[in-house]
Length: 87
Image (tube, rainbow, N blue to C red):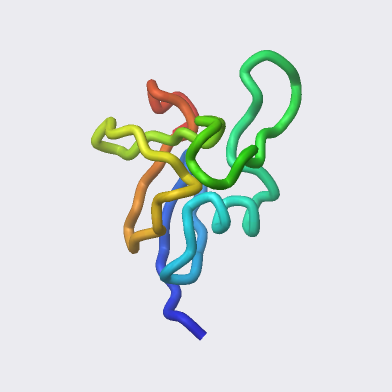
């Protein structure tokens, strides 16, 4: 069993396993990664390999990352929108 790390997305704190992608951790914990911009639906990633650009998230420093190809880090603080309005 891999060690646990703590991270926060839109102000919601949760644990994930070290070595998991952010996308896997979010889908496991919440069943989705963000709200769909144009409809009342949830998004859970699309291609899972960095091609579709459906899983962009933003770090607390403003850096944009792909959830499908970024590994969780202890203390990671993310937002599902560029302005951090979800926090």
